[in-house]
Structure formats: structure tokens, C-alpha cells
Image (cartoon, rainbow, N blue to C red; front, side, top):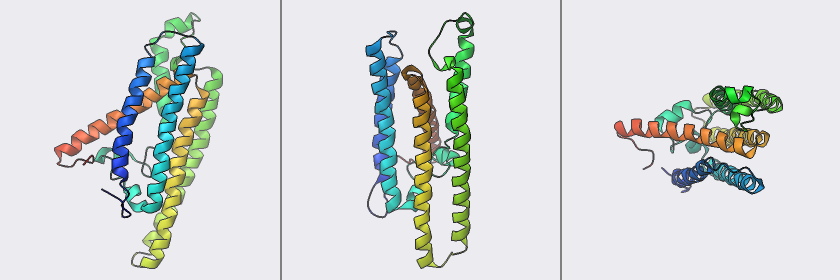
Length: 236
């Protein structure tokens, strides 16, 4: 499904998503590297930066698509029915980041609690420092506030539009407001992940990104399976 201006964002997304798979395969390979030296750390950091740049590209192109056809982007035709049911303004909810990092940290902490109690540093997400937890918690509070503000802005926009049904000229002007809302939501999504990654070591950042993308891959895979059973495939 293409936007009215001819820009095919769903096709871009399919290509982008395939490339993300390849990048995460590279990240997963690095987790098997037991070397802990300056060279390996630099390689880890480079891979993390590459993945974050890939996400930045996604939101940059999505912003262009939103300017051309905000209603199409808001409806997210590239996503599965399952993904759309979980969406917050055409994408994942930013506060999901914190649920994920706390969950992964807890799972790894419990699996290695004996080593940690012995004073051995694992250096993974189960070994977050008090300082890291504090910074993540502070960011979570800020993100919740921004998320709520954008949600309220969308609610006000919807109320305005509902009062103008049938007034095409005024509706056109109101649709432009949706572009701003989509961009704010995407900016918050990207900034949240960028800041969390900044709080983490390269090794922890790799584990976080792998966990985040595995969740993304899992939800999309399940959604594709369900849609195909119903005779609908968003990849086509």
C-alpha cells in the first residue's frame, strides 16, 4: 500500500526490517565472544552505533512519509493486525523500554545471583549498578510525562476533528496537526532508546538491543502468521 504521493513506505519498511535482522545477527555473534579488551569493546560500540543509526534512518524516512500522507502513516499499513492492536500513535509505546530492561535485568540477575553474591561482576544487564538504575528510573519518569502529554494532544486533536466532519477545507488544516503528533511520538521513541543505551556499557547495550528486537521480531512473526490465516499479508 503506497501513500497518496506515491512514496511506498511499507516497501521501505520491509527492506529496513530485513536489514535489522542481519544487524541483530551480528550483535548476537558478538555475545559469543568471550574476549574483554579494548578492541572487542570498540567493536561492540561500533555495532551498537550501527544499529542505533539504522533506527534513526527508520524514523527519518517515516517522518517524510508522515508529511506526505499522515493518515496512511497513522494507520500503519505495513504492520500486522496484532502489531496495530499494540500500537501507540503508529508505533510501540516508549515506556515499553523500561518494562523490557527491568525484566531482562531481573531474569539475568536471578540466573547469576550466586556469582553476584560472591562479588563477581558479570557485566551484563543483570549487573546494573545503582547509578544506572537511578538514571533509568529518572528517565522513565520523564518519558511517562512526555508520553501522557502527547496522548492528551492526540485526544484533543481527535475531539477537534470529530467536530469538523464534513468540513473538508478545515479538515485539511487539522490533518497537518497529526503530522506534528506522529513526529513527537517517534522522537520520544527514538530518544528513549538512545538515552537508555547511553546509560549502559557496550555489552549491556547489545543485550538490551537484542532483547528489544527479539520482542519486535516475535510480535511481528506471530502477527504475520495470524494475518495469513485470515488471508491478509501486510508484506504484500
